[in-house]
Image (tube, rainbow over all chains, first blue to last red; front, side):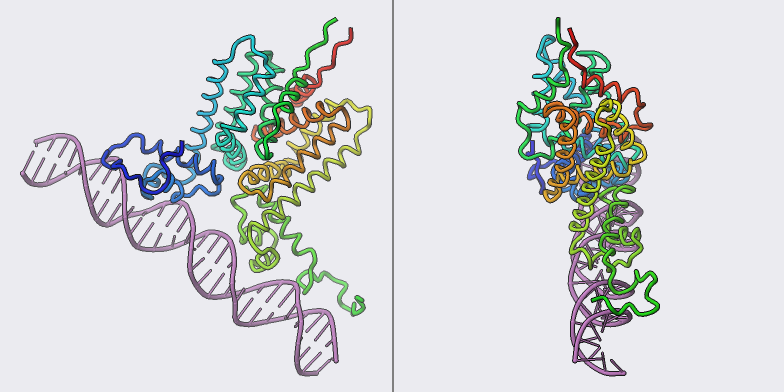
Length: 196
Length: 196
DNA sequence: AGGCCGGATGTACATTTGTACATCAAAACG
DNA sequence: CGTTTTGATGTACAAATGTACATCCGGCCT
């Protein structure tokens, strides 16, 4: 993923006078900076370096730094929702829900850790930036609707809460929690009504 | 021997030479700044203004700004843990756990919102500051142990996760979730084994 | 071809920030 | 009462940052 690293790319990208991907590339670079260094390290210069574009380009495509951050984080949140839905589509209807959710949590804490970090930076950034509240809420709603579609309203809500909690608790832990522990929590939360 | 308490010195000598509360007051001011404006707005000048001390005082009592932030957030986390334990002590042993947990969540989202905001700022700040990892982990452990003491290991872990998730999801929502919704989630998570 | 047009860029600048440090003043000590 | 000691403060300064804007350059119209 980190092919387009900092420093000037040797390629002649600037040849394309009108580059419609320019704006998006800058936004993605901002997301990378957030993932690697945190929201408070997002500066015009850091983003420009990450994107391999001149400083003026960041101020040209985004009126202010807050705009840039807002657009970037909103895009990241939407990407996360899309990824979430794709996961849901690939899930067999009769799958073991607890096991599947465990897989998802471990994926978010492992291979997709960067994404998860950004999502949580977004969450907290939204605490003091009303413009970001909607974006972080969308994530919650998406989770809730997704899990509800496999169970019921209350259970879906509860699962989305457990999911959020596991990500928050797991993202700072090192190493990440073992699979058994995560799965046990889901199984306990989904404890079936005993038969008989 | 603090003998020389000569006449006029019974008054407030805060501006006086030795003020052992100075350092702590600065740290508390930093916590206030975090709560009101976010981690990225913590500057020497902002903290000094909040604490009502001169700029030089912040650089004198803390070698670096990261130190100041770390000390402040660690103290905030410890305070939170203390508050949590106090809540536990005041809880009757035969209390309705779901209802009690709901009360606690609503207290953290309402009257104690500032504290909760700081706790989450700490969480995310720790993602890129190893020095803070322990402080945020302590909160998790405290939660887990506390809830475990009322149930069992797995259930306690699960409850702490639900609790974290509810705080995270609720802290950005406006208005905060209704009591029924929170309680329903706890009751669903604690669903009893049906008696047959 | 030649002159315009507007997107893109490099640079300059005021502001903010972290931090060092010379200086001060009150207590400790003789 | 003078000297020292040491916590505390005000100030200065270099670095970083957000942003404005003059300038450039490749396409486009005539």
